Length: 477
Image (cartoon, rainbow, N blue to C red; front, top):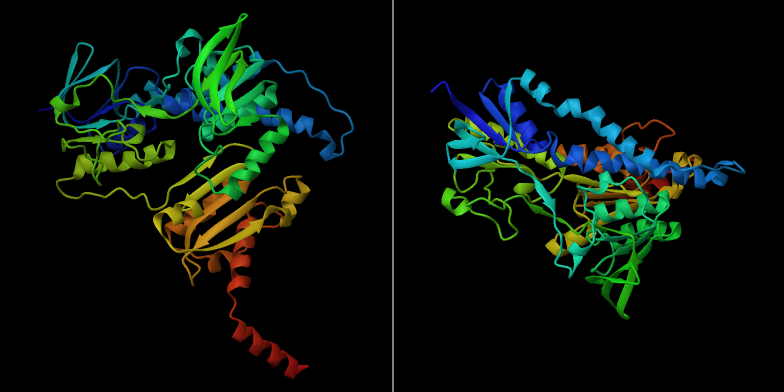
């Protein structure tokens, strides 16, 4: 049985890399199979390249805001091909972290090729047949392309091929008003494209509370992004040599001319092309692998993590799930761990950023969870004022009558960095009172977290006690 692996991991994205790393770290025999690029979507098509182009776009915007910083004149010359080469350079800088060489050195046997699951204990890759005690499915997800008539008549863009272009689109249509669509709409607009964003829902960023989303929507429109709500893309056509997107809009049919179209309406799990029924593995209605609280599929020695399992499509959640997959697969005869989703945070990297952990008001209302809400305006923060970034707010939901945090949302500059304090607080049951009592360096953005804790304190101070104190001090005068 020496040729049998303890764990075969299929997919070398965030979930697969962490699963294999944990297995090797505890001296299990682990195989990792990847048919495309090591690092998966996050490194090659998602988090890394998108944040690189967002940084370039933000720098352009800072130059445009030169008068805010006391600079009378400022100009720049944009070379879009160099911007995209910079994106590739950042990918290459990070590639060694996820490379075959690194994982081989850590004790993982890496195989390049497409995995074929023969049965619950056998996986074939190329001409090699791997026997295994357990399997982790971590094949990720791919961009979903909606059924738009004649969409194949143009070379449409997705998050996978966007990074191949070297010429800035003059007119860019973006389908989708979620995080990816909004991030790219703002970034390409700042770089010089005429951007039209098309969203079927009542507004972009539909998961966010109205007051939170408004900060981003107003900023994007102020910068020149044309945002179309309640608008559904129906057909691509050509007139007089020009590409047109035909949409159903509130005022009737709308024709939108474009040079490039970016589809960012969601992602679908990479579960196509496998006879899951033969393997005894059930899928959810949305195509993800059906897993239990231990991340086991309906075939109990086959686990799944990341986008292929859901319910969240975040790199950090895939990594979180990966730990449970590996540990449960390797040690389940003795100990099993239920996956913990109680404190999940995420960030939309627009400007301003939106960061959230736990529930927002919309989610709390839908779930029927009672709450109290406290807000802090970033216009009150000294550091934000000095940086000319005094735009946004912090909103914290608490359990009624207590300082227990059930959710926090931040829309501001550096929101993704600021949310970490609330993540830790929720994880370890730290309330607003202790955040208020913690010394935060001055002047910093993270002081805003203490600021919202102060709002809670003032709002909940018992009036009877304050009345007694007022009389006490009056007697001592």
